[in-house]
Every structure is written in structure tokens, then in C-alpha cells.
Length: 195
Image: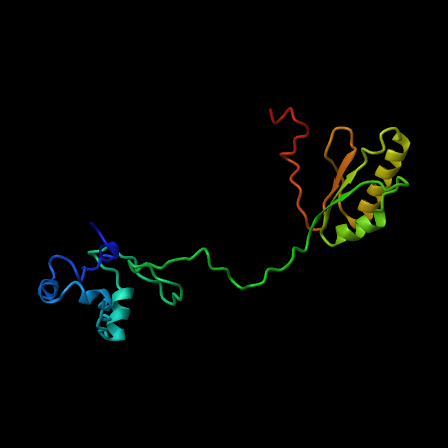
């Protein structure tokens, strides 16, 4: 039956092949062993062999034809696998701080008094933000919708950008920010072109 020594892959000091156990078993009496403690041998640490660093560097940088190893790039500071190949550890996070984005996509709808803040929209567009204006809440106010569209168009002409309709009824408008490129050639509205 396997014991703890076999589980760890070590030879059993009291195993059947041990000559010390046979000699101790003949000389010792079973009554005397009841109060004694068993000593467990400790493995000796492996010998350390010093290898010159020049040999290690040449072995790592030169590809071996026998093992098909890849040469470690010059200046490589990362870890190296057991085969001698450079290893990119994806679990290591870089401590470089990421900057916050400078542009945003803004959604604007009319407020409680059915107004659109065109002055604020103009400031955001000049900084590079893209604004989507939703006029769908003004369902029964066609004249007010047209007034909001005219106001947005005049504001965009002052800034130098264009207004784009995202739906067929011109109730969902997009105003790209400064330095934002809009592709007009492949613009298809609605679900019919997708199906």
C-alpha cells in the first residue's frame, strides 16, 4: 500500500528495500518502540554550480539548431520561457496612466419648456464633441420642430459644421464636432438596406 513517502515521490525510509530496517527490526523489541519518536530524514539541498555569465548570454542570444529556439531580441527585459523564447505576460499591468478621452458623444433632448440649448451645443461642438439632437418628443409641434431645426442650422453655419439627419423624418439630428470626418458615401438610413 502506498504511503506518504510514495505520494511525494520519495523513497520510504522504512520500506521493504531498506537494509537498516531489517537490522533494526531484529534487534529492537516491540515494547521499547512504543514510547520513542521516529526520525524522518531531510533531503540535502542540491549542489549549486556556478556558470560564467558570458556563456549564459551567448546561449540565450544564439538560436540553437537542435531545439529550434528563437533568439531573444536585443534589449529584451521581459521574462524568458523555459525554451529560451521571449515571453509576454498578459497578466502584468503597465503602470502607465491613461488619459481621459478628449471627445465625447452627447445626446440632447428638449427640456421641460421644449427648448434646445444651442449655445451649450455650440461650445461642445467647437471642442470636438459630436452631438445627437432628438426632436421626437415634440410629436405634435411641427412648427416648433422646424424652429429648432432652423436654430440648429444657423448655429452650425456660424461654427462651420453641417447637420445630418439620422432618420427619414428629420427628428433625430447629428452634428459632428470640429475635426470629425463623416462618410457620406455609404450612409444608408432605415432597416431596409440592412435586410
